Image (cartoon, helix red, strand yellow):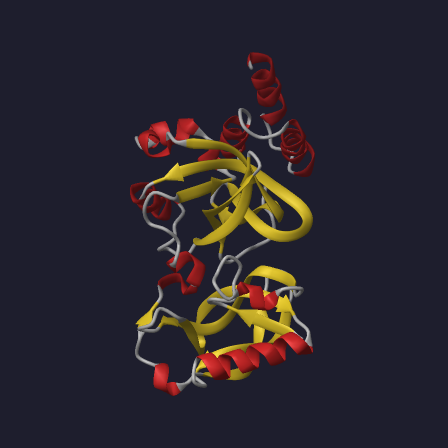
Length: 290
């Protein structure tokens, strides 16, 4: 059975242990709904034709579903109704169970971006940002006059079960994106950041224009796991060749941090998969200079 979770049953949240031995299929899944926060700080959704709620899709056993049914009925005084919904992923759609808040829970706080993990992400001293595209490049930050917001570099970080794409189209080519893809990984740079950096990133990534959306992912860096903010394209299209200036920023920013293996992947990407004019000579020159 498929189960879509959007609140306390998500990874890193207080009820996630109820899904022990279940299989996580996608962590960037979504349904048509609106996400609310109740007065006692719990999440619930109301199914709608408009609006999007992001969560995780699991394959669960009948035994686990029975336990969750009992938990919801006992602990929440039957405030949730079990419903069947269509869950959208970046690859295909699934039919799944979701727990919808009953009418008595309506009228509470609507959460922006439809993402519970994002809403609960720290806005203080423990904020981290995972950059995998041109935001790895210090030169871009200097040009924007915001390099001071990104001085605290943790170092190389790896995001498992994702791949690098160029699915956001602008006038001169593609821009970087991440997409769930089992058994592959994306490397990037992990920063420790402040709310001021978040404000800058939301503006730079076109969050309010609907280009990218913020999401929380788990990355590893220096043997530790971090929950970090990153951004992914909302309306993904087929990959489009990035322009030279953008590919240059990615490779220049990645070069001091990512592994040799991942640098080789980027070289292959920009010379064979996309054949970005000017990149072979630039990458060779950078290798010699470093």
